Length: 495
Ligand SMILES: *Cc1c(COP(=O)(O)O)cnc(C)c1O
Image 1 (tube, protein in one colour):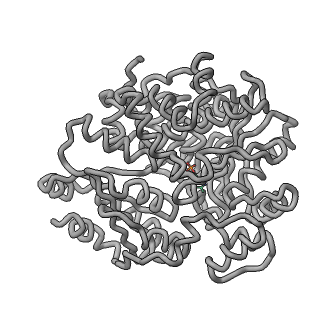
Image 2: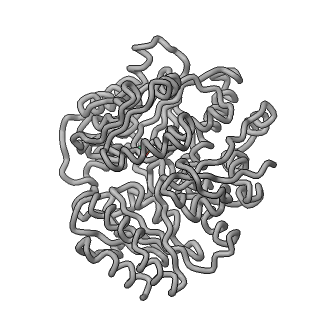
Image 3: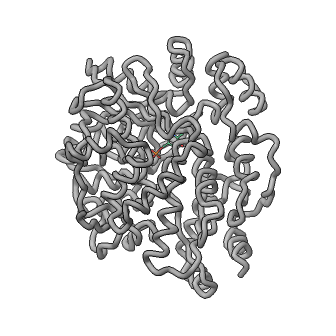
């Protein structure tokens, strides 16, 4: 197989191996890593994939990108990551809702789609340390507004050669999310709350990453910092798999004929998940259109229709918090593919200095020939949860509801009746109080009451990881000032 190296979206860095790209996270010039070439899927590949299990499909697709890993290594990692024990409801099953095919990506240990990447990525990093001759311990530092922190902790717990520390805003996450993190098991994990909001946590982590003195101190003590953030290529590549896998499942079920085009709709925040779908198309998956679904933080909807990305706007807190984002980092990868390195570097410079950039007409046209942008407000999100339940007896979470509404709008606007694969990104139980209120109009103070009430109302079961949460021992209670984050990191390492 052809060897694939990784280059920066912004310019002049030397190509590195996939293992190095995963270990490093970000390119030296601040850009994101992209493969030098996108491998393609032939008819023969599809024949193999159609007959394969999910772990086999994952290893097969990933081996085309991660060319310094053997297929056998990847297969072993994928078999463990996507096992029945870790994904009791299946890794990426489809449920039909009218013309929509809901791709359920939330059957993993933390009940959100981040598990799809964060279960396998720690294994990739672990191998990367060996492949690059790294002797030091990787210290993963994460700032989270909820879902990423827990998924990273579950993925990295007890992985050899790696430690992980997560910071979250003490009043900025839900009660369930807080408990999920405070009760985390594992010998190499630390969780710490900070007095402040998510930006304080994120800025604190960025400062620590950027501090040369701290880096040298770690180095002397045989540690180095690494990141589990969604800009890491190791998080993106496992996400390409499930779009290809769902297409194979639809062909196998006789839902479509091989070669038929589908549309794909993704509830979008950082643009990682939808960009993975776009790469699947670049590889040869027959996709007509990508529907980029946003909540009322609709900066991407505006960008797709006007060509101007402007982050100088109000930030809204919504019931789909994982999409409350004004800087969609992975959009940089799409800009690179469409406009090239030089233009991407200049857009990103403008974004950093002025908070706004405008792409040329030709770039805008190329984007809108593949992407349609839609958004869905709070009221419509609640209404969509209720209508989907009433009409199909099927419960969706707040993020998925945004996508379902946008997919329906798209069909209404265009008359395009191709089947739409909709990424269903979280279990409805993960956002139970909002889901329950959407269904009944009543609000419940206590999240655990909401879980039980939703279970009773829907006739489905609370996923085990959430059902057992209330009775788990709390391990982490530390709350610190953002100024003390470095001190806390050093203390954790034992420096
Ligand atoms: C992270 C997340 C998203 C957004 O995904 P991106 O890859 O950041 O666009 C959507 N829904 C849920 C539930 C998430 O956790």
